[in-house]
Length: 522
Image 1: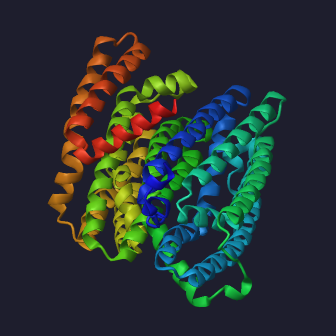
Image 2: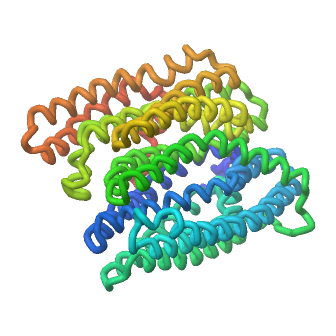
Image 3: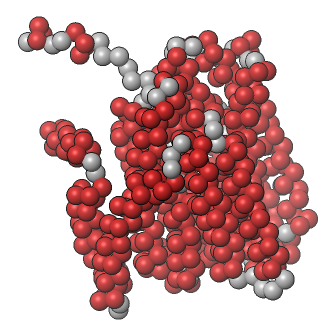
C-alpha cells in the first residue's frame, strides 16, 4: 500500500499564500469568536445587576478612553501580518527577521507611550468629568489606569500575533484569544459575586491579559523557530516602512474608531453615564456583527500580500470580487435580523430599560455598507495600497461629521442624532467613497464590483427579509417566538438560496467535501 503513494503526495510543498487554510482559519475564528460573544453578553448584564446602570456607563466610558489611546498602536502587528508571508513566499528569511526585530523594538516604545498616556488620563478625569461622574470619578480613574496597563502589555507582545498570523496560524491566535476571554470573564464574574467593583474588574483583566500575552509569546517561539529577534537586526529603513504601513492602516480604520469614541464621550458628557449605557448596547450588537465579519476578512491580508508577491494581478482581482461577495452575503442577513428583532434581543439581554428600537434600526441599516467593505479594505492592506484611499475616506467622513456636530451641538443632543453622526459619515466615507476609489486602484470596473459582489446576495436576502418581517407581523404579541420562527424558516430558505444561486459549482464541491469529512470524523 505504501508503494501506491505518489512521491509528490508525500512532498507536497506548503502553500505559502495561505489560500489552502482560508476555510480552516475562518471557521476557527468564528468558533472562538463565540466565546467573545458570550462574554460580551454576560458582563454588561452582570455589571448592571450587581453595580447598576450608572456603573455600566462608567465601564463603557473608561473603555472609550482606552480605545482612543489604542490609536497609538499604529497597526504594526498588521504590518507583520502583511510582510511576513511576502518574505516567506520569496524566501527572504533575513529580511523577515529584520522586520520582526524592528517591530518588536517599536512595539516596546509604543507600550511605554500607552502606559504614560494612561497615567495622564488618570489625573485628568477628576479635573474634567467630576460633575458627571460624581463620587465615582476616582473609580473611573483607576479603571482607566488598569485597562491602559493591560493595553500596554498587549502592545509589548503584539508582534507575536503578527508573526503567527503571517504564518497563517490563525487557529493558534484564536485559541489563545478564546482561552484568555474565558479566563478574564470567569475572573470578573467571581470578582462581582464576592462584592468587587469596577476596579476589581480592571485588575482581573490586567492580570489575565499579562499571563496570556506571555503564553502567546512562548507559543510563537515554539511554532516559528526560524524567527530570530535581535537588536542588531533592527533597521531604520524597515522601521520607516512599517511605520508608514501602520499609519496607512490607521487612516483607513480611523473613521470608525474616531466617530464611535468621540460620540461616546459626547453622550456621557451631555446626557450622563446612564444614557451612555443605553446607547452602547445596540452599538455593541452592531460591533459584534462587524467583528464576526472581521474574523473572515482578517485572514485575507496575508493571502493578498502573498498573491501580489506572486505577480498574478488577475487572480488578485478575482479574489477581491469573490471575497467581497462572501462578505456581503454574511453581513446582510445578520443586520436584517438585528434591525427587525434587535429590540427583542436587547430586551432579553439587558431588560426593557435598555430598549430603543428606532436607534437599533438606524445603527443596523447604517452598518451594512461599511461592514460589507471589510474584505476589500483588508485586501488593500495586503497589497500595501490602502494609504491614499484611506486618507480620502477619512477626509470625506470628517467633512460629513463636522457640520452635523455643530448643528446638533447648537440644538439638543439625543441618542438618535448621536447615532446619525456615526452612521452618515461611515456610510458616505467608508461605504461609498472607499470602494469606488479602491476599485480604480485594483483595476475593477465599479459596475462589475456591484454586479458580481452585491447583486446576488442582496436579491436572495430580500426574500429572507420578507420571511422575518412576516414572522414578526404574524406573531407580534409573541416576539421571542417570532424571532425563533424567523431564524428557523428564514435560515433554511437562505441556505437553500445561497446554495442554489450564490455558490459556484466548485464551491459546492468544496462544501460537500468538508461535510463528508465532518461526517466521517464523527
